[in-house]
Image 1: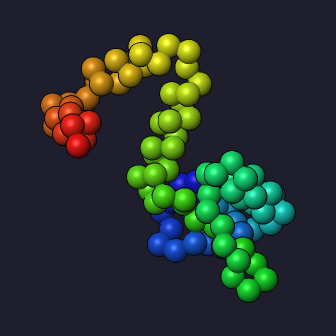
Image 2: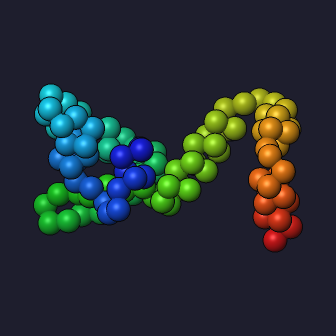
Length: 104
């Protein structure tokens, strides 16, 4: 996901493989399978480009982080404790930013 989030444009599986493993030892089919699974989970965007697909982050880098945070939070039974601890660890600027966003 880091590769997709950092890319300036959607990437082909071959481009993803080359970025992940310049030595070429990583199997192309493994990359395709992984990208397909990410797409099916909604964690990657996909569009056809000729005969191939290109993959990218569905909502840009900020969306990737937000999706990751949401998934982690949804796995916890005591969401209030998790959120309380998260907010308690924010610095003053981030806390004010969060307050401003919640009041919009």
